[in-house]
Length: 116
Image (cartoon, rainbow, N blue to C red; front, side):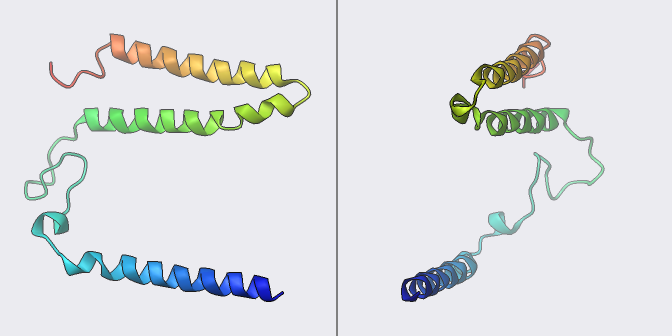
């Protein structure tokens, strides 16, 4: 019981120290470039009515798709412990094949080209 209380106390102290360092450290060196809002390739000082570039949207969607692919494929190594691991391998392969075909299609259509 004393070991559990000691572990909880040490982890609480470490969490408080790390949270306070993370809160106070960035405020010591403010910079005008770091303080200015900047998102998705927009100039923060220009007009808010500029047309949105679909290239940034495409890159974000591709990132989310391949991030989701990794999350879906993470349990695949544990499939070897199932009674029928071949079904999990077939599903994982179909996900990979579908995403690869989508990437090849996007590539061939020129959706990944930044300069025209």
